[in-house]
Length: 375
Ligand SMILES: [Zn+2]
Image (cartoon, protein in one colour):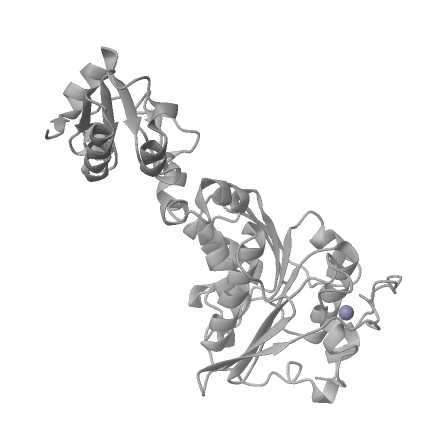
């Protein structure tokens, strides 16, 4: 027996007369909009346990999906199970909505639903994950080459609160890679320029612009309340300071660095996983002598390189916030742009590390600020 397809208007009238309307789409589709008073039961669940969701095989049942195809298949399955009075809504929820029929109120607004629809459709993110991102607080140190792509994508992804710390002003030589900034912004504080660009992209993301360099005096305050720290400063004083602060305060640190045609990225999570996850000092207990530190001398860098590394940092930050996948914890990922190769090195926690060894009392911050003075 062929399944009867009803127009949305007829289906609505039948629903008002007592028919049960069942939306067979997945939860993630339903949060973006569902016919009013519909029962949400994903198609597989409905087929597996119809009796748990439907009154009885004689009651009139209307099935609806997005465009009308899935509901038809579901109706055929129900008919095969003995449900005699099953119809579907032609054109699905799209047609229902286009006909101006009542929709269920959802707790997400239209901007949220539209803006994050590609996340909401991923079962691994979904509404739950997007809410997590919205509630997340990220500290990004540096609004430069690494910070630019990281900040753009974090804001685009819907990070609710992004604190950006940088005391620099935009220089024309930055524009080859620091894409948050524009030619018109030369001479503007980087955090101001960054806030402007990020607000234009996603006004939902609250930008906390802090025009300060990270120092032993302010690092605890900068890390206060944040879930993830991203090191986009790419200099030794900031790197060691952020590492030590993240160990002390138990925050995951997404590390990134670039030099000429090569970059590297990792996640240091020793603060939360003492003795298991390494910190940066497990690799390099002390900074190299200033004359051996290329950052101080402003070595050249291929403009796209921090783009690649900064995006890997943003990816790791989002994964950490969502609890998704396998982080770079305990792995150093190195990228060679000229060979177009990624290489991975395993990193172990150093049981004698000066800051993160399990029995170690926090030694206090070291001020490496004078470190680059001669550079
Ligand atoms: Zn360590």
